[in-house]
Length: 88
Image (cartoon, rainbow, N blue to C red):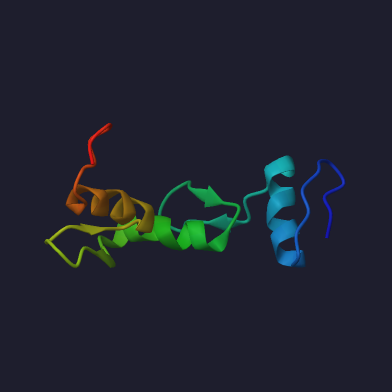
């Protein structure tokens, strides 16, 4: 499935549909609580957590919790030993 506006190609039609929204600006998934709108349902689902206060992404090492998976991934780096440049 190839985009007619750029070089993007996808193996699944849904991925092309979501990509085309980057060109059209379409955001069909609307939040019922505020003016937020998203091009992908998963982005709306993540946004809604901000209204509910739920923090489903939990660190296994400490008490950190997040509404966004990406923030948990960044947090996990705080538990990884730092490697100094030029040392072995």
